Length: 108
Image (cartoon, rainbow, N blue to C red; front, side, top):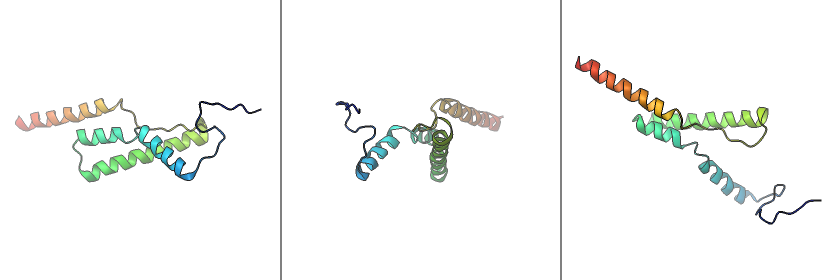
């Protein structure tokens, strides 16, 4: 007794081709914005290219490990974990505050 939904392009239990799954996977990775907070942080902190690359790579690694833990042990649903935009303001503010303090101490 399966009921077909006329609004779905691909059904829930339907298999898709490898090329279609590759395109949809790439779309999912780009839409989940895992890469945006480290780019903003690296730019705001004026990190060197090597440090920025390390930050972005570690963000992807951490998001991947957190997603696997979430999927395999806890929620058991395909939920992708990633960095949050919330601490960006605080991190950039602390960085700018320490730079201003350093400039003030050098002047004194």
